[in-house]
Length: 314
Length: 178
Image 1: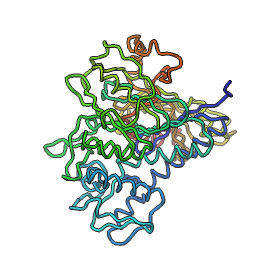
Image 2: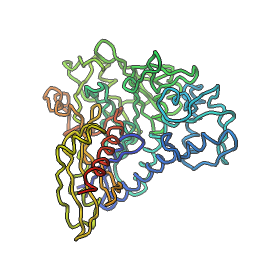
Image 3: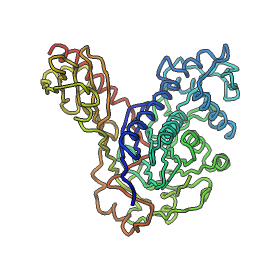
């Protein structure tokens, strides 16, 4: 017989979104302390990597790293190292140096202006970070995932048996039992599809249609094709499953830009993706890489045919 | 990392599962949030904000979703501050949150009490539930009474920020003089 455990679920507003932590542990005290520690981790990532807080580490680095190498925290180092690695693997499709362009398009605050700089102009070593030319880093495509990973590590360290951390749709679970994760697809219609059944892993989803804004005569979304220096208008919803949430978060952008061509990058990181594309009031679903990298181990629920028609995406 | 794409295997047979979201979570009740914000409080006295005062604030900071619930918080005779429960509605979500103010009107704490999707009740439609009928108890695919985890959320803190702005105006114009 299983011994009694305590489950708690707490939410806070961090990283510009609702961060929701559910944790199960042996005692109320353990769970309480672990959740508090997890939120402390999220708060520290928020304060370090927010483009919206003028005293963040990110804002300091963006201001000064062109002039002299800047010392950075362990967390900042980890996120930038991962971002540069994904940039290299994706041949620049993902690029953390799009801050200037995002700023010009009005998605993040700052002084805007972007030149020819790319991820190759960022030098990171154990001493710190230095820019070859003026540029602005943006961690909008990766920091939330990192915060989730840090929160999960804090919960594990404190003896939590099972947990889910969800930062505005970038989420990670751990524990013995599988969790069903749904993906929101219907905009304000509130439609969700059962997406994936997962134990010990991360899921991140990026859908851009709802984030679009008008810039001049055109629509823009925060999905930036760094190789062209242009925003993309995309109606795809991309979900990536990866061992960690930081990777899953970053890889959604790679898949949104490269589509099926992202298969190699995903395989490199032991990740896989599902792209949902609206088509005549239904969703076309593409798996990348085809068939996935992992064999099915869990039987998916059978879906009756009368659910075939779903409302057109908004 | 163990996982199975559900949507992909379902669409392979050319059907798309659909569900109106019933994503609703009660994180904390009002009494729990009051205790966390003011552990030393001995009294929470309800305070009614007049319709005129609400209308006055709405002119400058947007309308309240409902009527904010306000309590004057005391420890014995000493005023500890104000505790307010309010609601905001975003694109698809409705958030109930609480704000604790010290006697000078500074925010000491903000808690999210509940989150729900605006179309939440539709999941109770038997047709949608059907898809999980026949699931064996040994199947690890488990469905709780409600959907627990949603990826691809569109929630933004903006609405809560606007709500908090309204509450601070409420303090300035009403509570500070009460």
